[in-house]
Each structure stands twice: as C-alpha cells, then as structure tokens.
Length: 288
Ligand code: SAM
Image 1: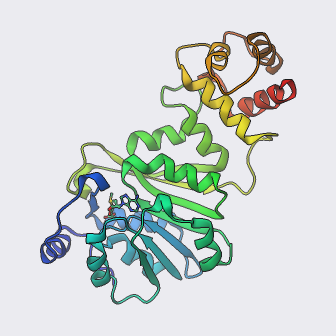
Image 2: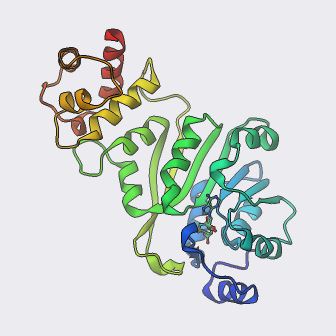
C-alpha cells in the first residue's frame, strides 16, 4: 500500500535518514495524495504497462506506480536517496531503481529489454532545469512512447499547449505538438511540495501521435526553420530566417518561399501554425 504522499510520513522518512535537500537536483517532493492520484489517473496505467519514472525522490509516486503498473524502472541521480528508496519500496517486487542521470540513460535499450520495444509510459515530477532536454530527447530519439505525464513549471505547461498569436507560443509549443497531444491535467500550487518551490506547477499529459499531424519532408529542416523564426521574436519571419545561420538560402529566396506559402512577407513567425511551418519547410527544401 502507498504510505507516503502526506507531510507526516514524508518528514518521518527524511528524519530517519537525515536527508538534506539538494537544490542542484531540483528536489521538491510531493506531499499531496490528491495530486498523486490525479497523476496516476491521467497516466492511465494498467497492469500491462511498463513505466519509466524519472526522479523518484523518496519513492512517493513510485509506490503508486508499482501498484498500478506491471513493471517500473525509476531513475534517480542522487545517491543519498538510494537507501531510502530501498526502504520505501521494499514491499514491491516489480520495481528497479537505477542510480543514474536520466540524460545518460539509453531509454531505447530500456524499452527494448523491459517492454520488447512496445510503447512505454513515462511519468515524472521533473526538476525544472531538465524538462525541455528530457522531453525533446525522448521524442527526437524515437523511443517508443505511449505517453509522458509530467509535472512541470506552470508556465512551461502553458507554452507546450498554446497555439499561434499568444506570447507563450514558440519552438517548444511546436515541437511538442508535432510529436504529441498536450493536455494540462491539473494545476499544482507550491503548498503541495516539500520544500515549497517559488513558482506554480502543472501536470501535463503528452499523448504521442501515432503519426505526425502534418506532412513534413525533412523534420530536421522544419525544426531549423522554427528555431530561426523564433530566434528574434520581434523581427519578421523573413528577417529572422535570414539572420539565422541554419538555413543556407538568400534573402530573396526566403521571401519567395514565404510568398509561396500564401502569407504576407512581413508576417512574424509567431503567427504561423504548425501546418504552415511544415509547408514552408517543404517549400524551402525544394529551393536548397
Ligand atoms: N518524484 C518525487 C516526488 O514527486 O516527490 C521527487 C520529485 S523532485 C521535483 C525531482 C527528483 O529528480 C529528485 O529526486 C532529484 O534528485 C531527481 N533528479 C534530478 N536530476 C536528475 C537527473 N538528471 N536524472 C535523474 N533524476 C534526477
């Protein structure tokens, strides 16, 4: 039975092991059972599933995951948490804890060995400084993923979900929406954590698309075009792309490509939809 997830039991474990929070690892542990239950519900885990948990902390969410899933691998960077996890997870025989940096783990290999290359589910309450590299790494390395259910900074969750014409719209929104359907599950105030973070958080579920929602001939080029467009937000799309080193086209050919897309040449990148970025990159590809 899951026993952590409330302030009293969490404090007891922390005191028993004289645990000191490490700021550099972004350690804010969840102490709210309602939020934990919402995360597990949103992740739609069944006894058939293999789940990768990133950053288990003292094992609060891991206990819930072990109850719901067939098998869990939890990757924790902080060596001081390993003896605690051995204690808090001792009654579960379907969990393996790896004392590693998630950015150095071969997740494709893990999915192959643990789940015969079938799509895995990822659940995490991430340290905020590695949110983007982890999510993009999971998508770009083509790990077989069913969904990623993660706690992130509220502002980052908003950025993943919005469309054109809003201030939060940018390269992260487009990248996430190319690979997955983002849905904010619940907003989580600082009081649900120990210690309390300075910013609000949100749980977001990213459900991987079976097939990308747009036709792109060259994914890498499309992401270059996106990066170039948002590189200098206040500039027009044409100037942004022209000043960005990644696209070897003359200013005239860039303008011609934008005209072919059927939008005004002085448009800004933040006004384009994912579908328009895909078409623009297909047009540019033909001119390279
Ligand atoms: N999941 C726990 C919870 O909800 O209470 C802990 C969440 S805490 C925000 C983030 C956890 O990720 C910490 O336990 C931290 O040590 C771990 N962590 C930080 N960087 C990591 C990395 N690069 N690889 C694996 N774990 C990491």
